[in-house]
View: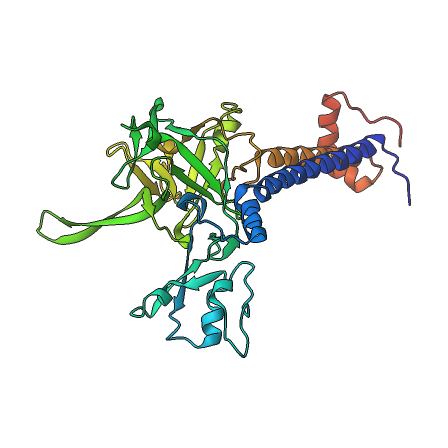
Length: 377
């Protein structure tokens, strides 16, 4: 192998490899820490302990464990035995669990069962996770509950400042202001295995923050009646896994401007529809907007969590769709610029006649910078 004769090139290659190793080692360490925290959380360890001592796992609050997967299924009296056993398969489920030629299948061994089985009058329903299992956005049941982030959080909105807080109301809405009961503004965050965030407050532990469509009849000036629908962000009990959850995304424009590095604003995006959560200035309540719309979400959709979410090991913030993590993007840009500079230096100092002619402007530029061509290397 021919030895490189340009010391600068060797140095840059070594720097690139060293930086890449450090970056991926740090990423692997962060992932391992997050996964270990998830595995050591009460939901998984407690489930294993209950199985070891022979106790049935206790169902946790809705915010920590959604049971309804949202997957359609048929009642046992409308489906054959194989379809009935396999239609709610998911997660670590064995489609033949408990199925024998002599005694059929043991319902207690199923990870999820069809809700229509509980009512003889129902023909269809949805798959419901058994005790010890919780649904995720993939509409499957997974063992253990979600990871509960240790702190309680107070959420404010950039447009209203730090004195006004986000809180839940008894009629299923989410508003900005000062609640009568402080527990309505104390938010908890639970994270699923698919890194979906569930938000709920202490006052309503059986409801979670969710997005839904609300329609009402409206009569226009001509006497015609039509349905006016709004996308509402509120809270509701008995959610479905295919409609639940949020991504908490880093507000990249704040970091790029150099503000809020230790406690940046974040955007909250629906994991189901991709819409962005914001607070309507007129109703002072939660709404959702299409991210492709103009000024969506604006300052009314920049949320501030206290304590800060940035830099925690028990929750991993998301990045907006189509973007790279800020650190990776900056590192990649630095590497690309270093490679371009190396190529330019190598080409300018080459003896190839064609390259010398083609890159003459570059040579002039380097000459202006004090880099003159010397002896042939």
